Length: 100
Image: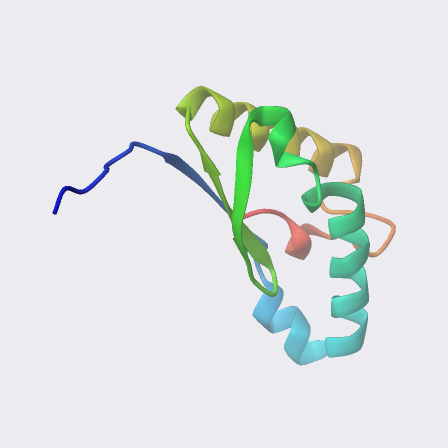
């Protein structure tokens, strides 16, 4: 039996401090995360020829055929986080809701 192998670049996105924030305010943190995903994380990865493999409570795994495409996507995410005010989950600066 032959196996098909392929190379892939994986982008792993995760929010720093998520567990602590959930412990302090589960409902508020969840609402801020949903807003952040609408603004940022639900980017269409096909713009960078990527495919969402898995989402978790505070992150996601995205597969790319090219490292260059993965890095471009990661840079775009970081730029948008800055535009949102280092996270913007609470409508302002929230250093605890930044990508890890």
